[in-house]
Length: 193
Image 1: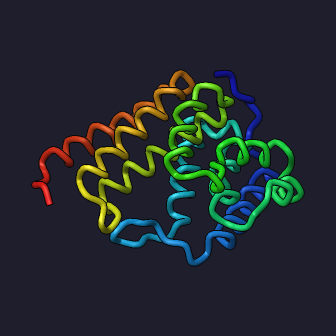
Image 2: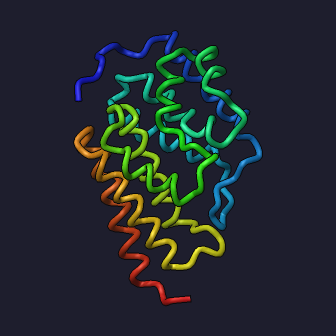
């Protein structure tokens, strides 16, 4: 994957901090599903860090998209609002990684697997980073009430989504693979509930 080689400048830094503020405000009060109840923004920050590191900081649009990747899906934010605030490239990228919440959950999950190979490289990076973050979170703080079987099912589903995204960044794919292997090891050693 070829990425732009423009160094981040002061304008990029101002834009990133605007996006951080926007995402934090939009997701205020939201918590992760895990037992620890971490602020939801922690997930957004981890996804953004993963794609920033994967691209060596050379693609500000994908970092901004990562910070905003759940705003349309999980808040009242619209694609038009994102475009007005942050430009068409960012808004389109966020829309590309957004599930249609009007569909049943099983259908949304099926579509993530089916559409993953057809996403842009930037969207694939965000998808891999998102699933990596989710697996890491499941490892350290599984959602209350999730059985070991449900956790294993999530790990397997995430791997199927990521399989359709492979080929964009070996480093990021290794991060996912490490989280996946660690999770399966842990799930195998836990006694059934």
